[in-house]
Image 1 (cartoon, one colour):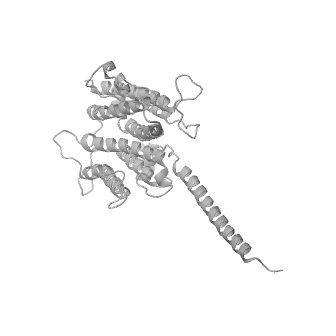
Image 2 (image 1 turned 180 degrees about the horizontal axis):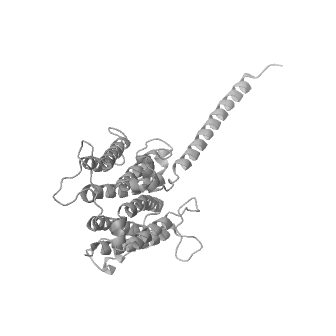
Image 3 (image 1 turned 30 degrees about the horizontal axis):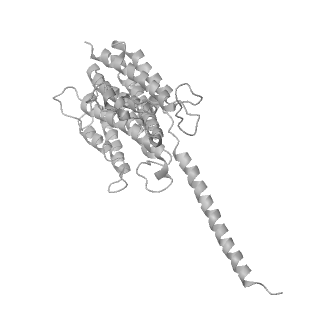
Length: 339
């Protein structure tokens, strides 16, 4: 009985194809699992515990004013850069390139980090408008404003790491005011906090509007009927495209995550002025609203139901919490602006 050479070749070809298909399936499954892991939102952290660990002390009373705030900004940047998968926005290979939700989260957190660093450089670390700016903060702020989507020459991560290093230098000078270099300053005044709160109000208002646009159309002009618009010169915002609803939602989640920690740091470093102005409860209301906004989601996708239907609308729920935080921010601004 002789072997059939054609049958042998066919079996060999099928074996190769079967092996290649199995290998491809394993790679795809591995990428899906890895992408799911990388797409998880970072957990919240305790701002005072992180500052205590960084300064190597036993209690926050041993820290100078502003240390918790500056350390919180540095740690927010470190979380963005070193969470599972690292910084993903500038990835050019799978699975990172497909993880658009966590990339939107990163951008939302980055915007809040930039605003808070700008406030530290321009307001908190200066005793008056004519005073010189802090040398380390003058370096830290521009690094965080570098292009968030640069893959190389230089990479985004490298620039943000320089920003973190500059913040650490500022913290070292804040911790050791008697060192040979010029001491760092931090001024927890009502007018400084009022100026930063103005920026927060605009950020939250913008996020609230974009989230609400997941189902709403704000004017007739959005439907192609400009005669229904209340103000013909007012820019209109139509319904958020279906494929962008999850991106807007996760950008808001990242913004709330970063702002929540920044506000907790402000609660510590501005405690005297907040108590004096009887504004501590107002700040707590902002913090509570942001914590509610970060409640874990139960669905693997961002639900976008209508009205009182059987499906939730994650965007509108998030918009509600952000609106509450924004209302508290408006109250905080008014209290800080009173004589």
